[in-house]
Length: 156
Image (cartoon, rainbow, N blue to C red):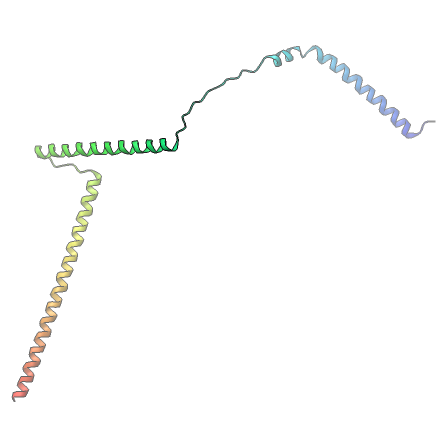
């Protein structure tokens, strides 16, 4: 009589044989169908290539570009100032009040503030000078009074 391990080995061999038979039969069924799938796989994928060309500037070229941009900006600013000056002249000739730019308005306001501060400082200086002069006068008057008193006490 076979032992338990021998029986288990026999059952395993039979089960594996059954599984192999099922897989072979499925493989044969699948071999008939995948022709369409293989045909789809056989077509090469569509590849789109895009060429990007970009100029990479050297450091000297970057500096030159920056310098040219600054020169262009200065030229534009100079041109705008000339036009503004000409417009102001035309307005003056026509008797119109000149229009100030925002920068000119800020500068004028700052100038007015400086003038007012300067005026206040001058007024403070004048007031301090008047106080010093009044103090000198009082001290001189005291000295005269003391001298007069001494002279009166010495004469009497």
